[in-house]
Length: 612
Image (spheres, rainbow, N blue to C red):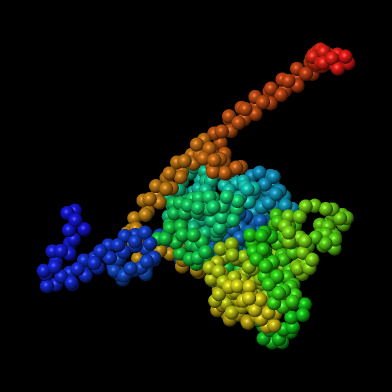
């Protein structure tokens, strides 16, 4: 429509080719609309928006990680002996990256809890006094458990760098309390791999931007923080805030973003790719090969009598244990009995979940007391859920925290069940499949990688779950082919990581057309600016940083001064009391006598009137 309210098509009415010209104008308008959308979502892939060139599939030089001269810094948010995914997976990734590269080419950057109470709370029986003590434990685990002695040797393999950190009990996570980039020399800052880039930057201290410090920065997103925030009290408000903050952090500090599964939110469409870049240890794959050989040679009894399934994970309702209970009830309705399961893991809701499964009978209470080494007497306490009053206990054994391979290898188990849908990519599911076991899991985007394996039995509803479980009880897992077995190895995961990190020349042109790089730099500059000095401490405190809020050190003189003045005042009062104890006693005794006399004087008329 023109400014004079006439249509551009009016002038074409008398034209013989009017219809064709109108169509051409419509096509041009459609192209303009698609071009505008393509700037925001390059994944639309409209043909013709960006011309095809011969070098479209060539990899940009700065993103080519196959070059042997590259130096890697793998930065993560956790460390052994905390057996969490962000401690184990980055360690193994860094170890495999050292293969075929010169000494010192790969450095793992991990947190050192500088507060002793944090170390006791998180590492329990391990008493690390220095980072060197903990580094020795990490290298021992890498050598013995992961079977990588060469990579664990500091002279020939992986280098380890520590940064100061604190444990945040509310988030149940570790956060840095200093600028990590300052520990890395400028002449060695080539490739940076940020494991959980949003987590590393929420409460970061002032310092250089990762993309300015390094030639190339890759972010690997492990955790669905948006889903976790949404499940908490006030999650309706917290979830979108967490999602937006995470998107800003990932966009500002990464050149390429790898999402482990499509269940994660969209961070920056022009930078991200979905790819599983995790693997499992070699002993899991070896166990799968052994199980396949035994099944092929001698055959294993397929009787369902005494066969138990098992679950491995943190003992929380959010990890799918509520769904597992509903599946137990449905299976009992269809078959007449519960299915037996061993539940392995620990967590803050262990006692509540155990009671919900076993009920509150005297026998179960005695069993719990015996396992904990407590008195077997009956101690009544308030129930936390109505499920505790069940009459028929579910046949579930709670085995506590154990290493997955140590208790699950062999022929004792052949069925792994994991009903959780809050995971991004469940490592224990991959380990179970690698060992040649059935994995009964929900048909969910977080499990899309596992659907290619024949022993994966996905279900969409309770009926499909019951059918899958019954079928698994009566059959043996199919032996994995060498090609499928290789998909679980860390060597294959490293190859996927290098391929997913690469940026092609066509992607470079798409990014240039999107014109987002300048915006990303401004986001990073603003975030660093508000993180500086005392202002940064205040911003972090308001954002809920808690023990990691004060990072600048500029509040320390003021806080120490206040503590000193309070301490001096207490000492003054104490010394005055010691020097004038007698007179203080006299004043106190006189005050008491005066109060009693005043009370008698006030109430004596009233007492006299009563006597009359």
